[in-house]
Length: 412
Image (cartoon, rainbow, N blue to C red; front, side, top):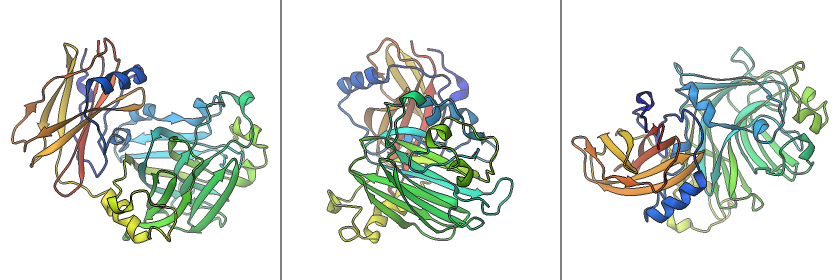
């Protein structure tokens, strides 16, 4: 193993968020790793195993950690004119060509695959290109999208109509160009139902999955979290594509039939959207025991107040503590050095990311950490892993999650 000294990063994490370092090149048998670790460790990373997927957009190299739908499905049409991270501002910018999501029309999606329940949050401001005004073209918005994979689609020739299933919440301009709006949309077998509503130019938005129930939330500047929409989607599979979407210029995008649109970069048209994202944070929801098994999409069973009690502020409370770590591989084991850690006894949850998959590793009881310590070696029973990312998280006394992440670049 050759440790890369440039991959060590130390951060403060918000609830459910492990800050970021980067895989320098892909690879690694993720499925075999998951099986091997399940046999090697009885501990589970039950709460924050998704935190390793989060991105604070402070390093341009993290773009390589995102999957793109046009690549995964073999469309060979990159409908993003600009996709970049500015480390100085900590923002990712997405500027789409003319493209859209509606019925069988398929647009831009940058995503991570997530299995099971989740909460995904971003902060976005959306405007017309090069200004701060609302977009001036019909259905020009950016936000969070949750989509069922289509493994049967590997090229335009394998595509069939009627296969789109997704939910999204976005902001920009919907049916009233020149006005800030939200758009909530649910699509079942390519039948789309959308709901525009009055919006703002900048907001935090969130989608939570609890079983078959999906909750959309938003928080505008100076306000608290509110529930935007609820959906009951028993048709959606356990593993979904969860990430960011942008789309613009419905009149010109819809002038092409879906199959032609989906494999075309429209260089003309009248695109007018620039979306800037401050972060994307993934975590598991912590559902109160009293609500276990409830129909969260049914407001007669679960009120907005009850939802907000665990999907609002509680899902993103910041911590004042910090976690710093270093990692190396020696004699078939991971060695972790904790340089800065908890001020009270906690359980440290460790996880790995290999090939885009999060894998539980161990749960380690820790005392308060007045000085750096080295954890006992953690055996990894595989001769070759390739590059791996190691995450460490714990919950502090306020209920917030503190985390850090580092990359072990080359394991033998």
